[in-house]
Amino acid sequence: MVLNYSYSNMSKIVTLTEGASIALHGMIIVAKSGGKANVIQIAEITNSSKHHVAKIFQRLVKDNFLESHRGPSGGFSLKKDPKDISLLDIYESIEGKIEVTSCPHDKQICPFNKCIMDNVTYKMTNDFREHLKKHSLADYLD
Image (cartoon, rainbow, N blue to C red; front, side, top):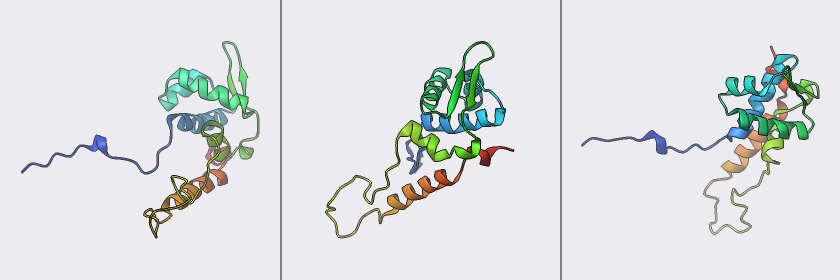
């Protein structure tokens, strides 16, 4: 008997959307640049589409984390000190507020006497939120 494993069907418990990943990594790139970083540089470093980077970064401009500079020497620069921008601020700018709830499906009444997740989703969400909250861009500068 030959067992054939397919790893492409494996699920991940925690995932980070491409948009949130671009925002978090891209903001660190801008902070490390010491001045300006442009869409092409950020797209190359994050291995992302420049159109997706531009869309994500316009959101960060709208939410007052960045300034956008036009022209051949343009790009993005931080509007705030890196220590004043938490990873949570960036994440929630792109994904919306993280809601910590006791039930992953927001059910008021559970059909069982004990949660089958044993509230692990509550703990994971809370831990994730707290991790993002306690780290700022300054933590990733050399």
